[in-house]
Image (cartoon, rainbow, N blue to C red; front, side, top):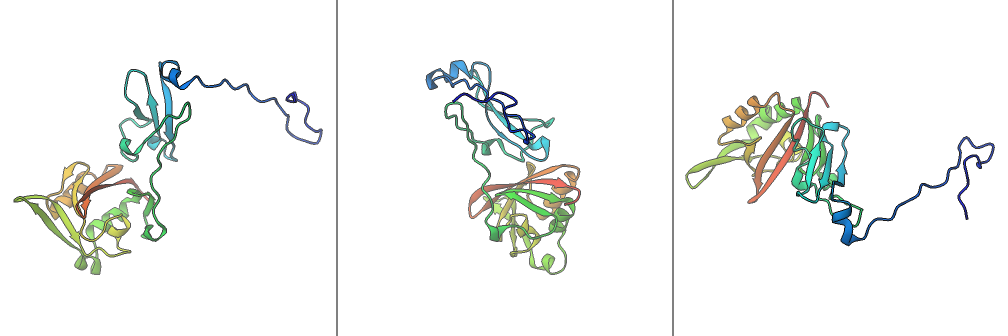
Length: 224
């Protein structure tokens, strides 16, 4: 059956009906590299309400795939190693950030989890978590983590569900190692690291939980 031409819609309809656009079939898989990737191929995209955190994954015939953003410098908000694209003919798929289980979602004002290890946080919430007040400050203990005679980070005890640090994704006994690649060798260095990064728009915290390396990424905003 032939597609209708423009103007064939019922008179009462505000729309016009147009024939479908022609579709060119993809080349065979064996010809994909030479036909499509000879210049550049878009493998996948991740879009964000914040343009500078949107990511495109590109592939070329002469280079390994690259992740590009609109930001003037790379943003680890979506880490490049978390962006996985698998070519299936001309189609592509990405592995999204694993969503948090409902019982683990943060309830502290100023903290919005976007996925496992990815958060948008107000600066006030970060400052409150670092400074601590009242029972929280008395209950939380931060001790140096010493290995082979060297301090490698700080171990945090006393974190309970609902605490600010818990809402930021930390658990009792976590060992914090680095903040934006600044080694955290003592509680004072934790505060020093944050003081040096007050103007930053992101924080990447690398830590260990039960012997396994992990990281959290925080996008900092004035208010949330």
